[in-house]
Amino acid sequence: MGNAWLQAVQSSPVVEYAGFVEVNATIAAEQVEKYNLDGKTIFKSLDEALRSVQADGIINVTPPQFHKTVSVTALNAGIRVLSEKPLAGTRPDALAIVEAANRTGVLHMVTQNYRYSVPTQTLKRVLTEAGMGEIGSAHVEFFKGPHFGGFREEMAYPLIIDMAIHHFDLMRFLLDSDPISVFGRSWNPAWSWFKGDASASVTLTFANRVTVSYNGSWCSQGRETPWNAHWRFECANGVVALHDDQVYTQLTGREPVLVEPVQMERTGQAYLLQEFYEAVAQGKAPVTTCQDNIKSLGIVFDVVESFATGQVVRSG
Image 1 (cartoon, rainbow, N blue to C red):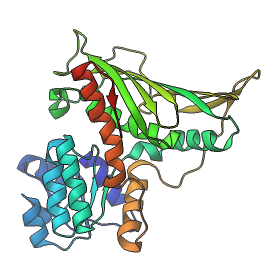
Image 2 (image 1 turned 90 degrees about the vertical axis):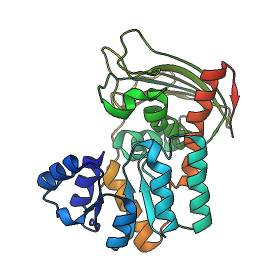
Image 3 (image 1 turned 135 degrees about the vertical axis):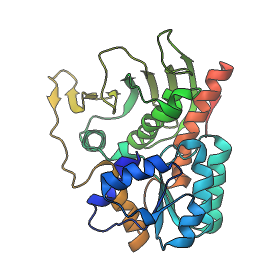
Image 4 (image 1 turned 135 degrees about the horizontal axis):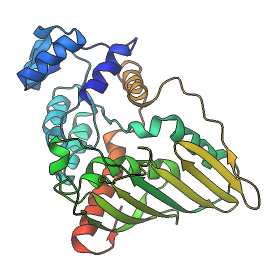
């Protein structure tokens, strides 16, 4: 993700780097050569960087267990934060970040980039404008088999904590509602290369009475879905589906129709970076602040609690 954000900033016409923090000297040297960076702007700690350069904001691209330390340090220094998801690795850390943002009044924004893809925005438009009627239920399928190495393969629940946060956040975005209860179970197939449970099945009930079923695996051996997952919405007047990143509608009694994708000037990290810039430079309120995003992350921790207890967990 460090590479993704280096490329995003270098491609931006309005944002530039003031400096970098990298604790690994080998990685720092590699990135200096790869991106033609000034090695004098690379520091060993955030405190050192903030003492040495003038910055309007930071992009926090550390593993989740370091998000609290980095984000709170920046917020206490009056520096706005654009943080990689998840907001934090634990609920107490996430609450501490929100408390710091509220106390200081400094912006903290989370990079929920899956909201800002063409397939997702097309799906949102159809659900909002296409006359499909009330949504009764949604079904999400996600199957991938990535070999990341590193911290993800050591997590207790890698699929849910590091990946499903995107899909849970999309549920809130697409349904304009928050869950009131969750129930799920997790497991780890014998062939899994993850230490923790990499497969799960979850049922979520939302405040607007929509029930969502989520089934996924991060150690799938074939027939993978896109990263956005496959979605199916059962509606009063028909069905809306996202399959292989294409949106389809089917009114009751009619043939399926492929929906023309929306046009977007920016997507993903580029969209979020521009939104962060506009928040910092122009005072525009971004959508995925930590105060809102903790609701998406809360789903993750509620699901993990359900895994551990075998019980329905009340949310909200």
